[in-house]
Each structure stands twice: as C-alpha cells, then as structure tokens.
Image (cartoon, rainbow, N blue to C red; front, top):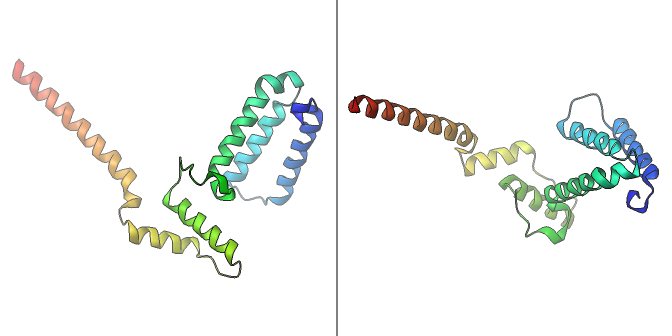
Length: 155
C-alpha cells in the first residue's frame, strides 16, 4: 500500500494488526509477541509520512520481510536450500511440519521429547557454550602467565 502512495492506509493496517495482536495475546510476557509489537510500533513510526516511509520505512520493511522469511523457511517450499541459521531443532520441526502436512491426525512429539532426543544424541550440547567460554578464559589466563614468566626471565 505504502509503495502505491497509500501510506495512510498502510498505517491503518498496521494499527489493525497491532489491535488484533493485543486482542489475541494474554497478559503473560512472551518474547516473540513483544518483538512483533516492537516491530509494528517501529513500522507505524516509519509510516507517519510518505517521505519518511520512502527514506526509512521501506528499507526497514524489506529488512523485516527478509529476516522473517529466512526464519520461517519451513513455511515455504522454495527456500529449502537456504539454511543460513538452521539448527538441529529447526530441522526436526521442519520434518514434524512435513509429517503433519501428510497426516494431520498423527500426534506431534512434545518439546520435552525433542529435548530428550537432542540430549541423547549429543549429551554435551547444553554445556558447549559455557565450556567453550571457560576454555577461552583458561587459554587467556595461561597466555598472561606465560607473558609474565617471559618478562621475568628477561629481567
């Protein structure tokens, strides 16, 4: 709409979406919903005039669209090869979505089951991030000690 010089109509659509989001969501905090609310608010600010939209709103909207399309690769068949940020869990969910599409009566596994399966396949997965951090810290500490000892030997 805004690309067709109907920025007021686009603004109204965003306000409508924002109201629908408020109606659907309960009072519990949800990061995804908070993110969507924030994006809608930003888009509304960038739709205040045609000039603002053309300079800032359109690039922002295209960026959001690209970001959402990449994150939602499971919803479209044409981006299967685009796996920039795919995780094993995303792959599992994609397979579950395909399975559900083939047979909607087939029950999907619970998140707990997915976590148990991931843990069985890679028991160290929950520790990798922290372990990597502490190993890097240890390496830096050893380098510092080595530098101190080298300076002491030269003196």
